[in-house]
Length: 399
Image 1 (cartoon, rainbow, N blue to C red):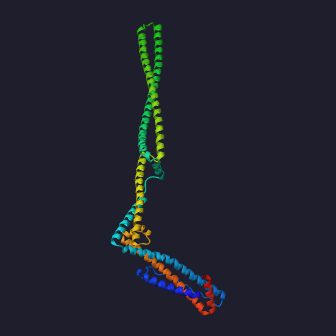
Image 2 (spheres, rainbow, N blue to C red; image 1 turned 180 degrees about the vertical axis):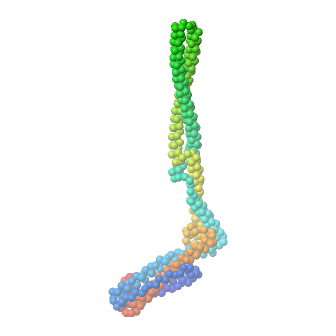
Image 3 (cartoon, one colour; image 1 turned 135 degrees about the vertical axis):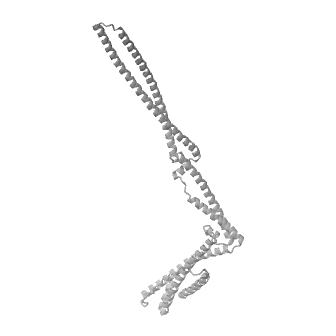
């Protein structure tokens, strides 16, 4: 009958679990205390057919769920056991094979560390600067030299502009001095002319009124007037000559200043363009960024080379593990350090044993639930042939 089959399966599974427990006894007890969760027994009026059938259905569903849990856990349990067997195979391998495995794993560990170190490296340039370096890499060195020349030339232009501005201020000061001197000469001329005219009137008055001989004073006055006039004319001509020369110098200074300003504007725009092109503030920053980029590029090349070597070493590792009969080979690429360091392997083994103990406890728990529910079904079945018939029909219907 269906119920006997279920009971037979329960006994068979119990034997399997006992065998598994015997096999795992070498792993030792779990370090964590087992958490007991006792199920409360339902009090169902079995004389009520509806309640009885519903209760039997719940027991059956509980058995099925516990069975499904056991099946899922056993898959994981088998995987963990397989890992432990693989470790045992590596431990029992011939010394020559173990040495080869050790060297390959050591190379993987060192390459992985170097790769991770390079990945963590921080480069002192922005993404925009990196993009500019990649776009204009063949021209960077030439542009760097040109930018240094432009910035040096900019300093010279600024110095020339300051010098020309200073020279223009001096020339304007000279022009103001010349104008002031010329104004002074005109004033002196006017005052002197007025004084000579007044003195001449005075002499003529003396001559007409007092009939005094004024020939000598008159000649002296004329001589003095001629001498002063000559000096004023000479100074005036000198001022005009100086003014012409100063004007020419001013025009030349203005012309030079304009030419320098044109060079300044063009050079400034060129420098601004170079700064914008490489996303930098000056040639010093461009030189630093370019140096950082070259270092980074060499490290990126090393990363690619390390990735190639890692792939090569991984293939060698897979071949060596396959030769030893290891079933789950792929996981050891990421646990190569455990092959190199015995302490790490002990940790891995301990972790696997803990995992297997937890899985075994979970299997025992679900098997206990199945046994309790089956005993409850057995108890109900033994109470009445009618109950037994209902249980048989339920099991046949759900098979």
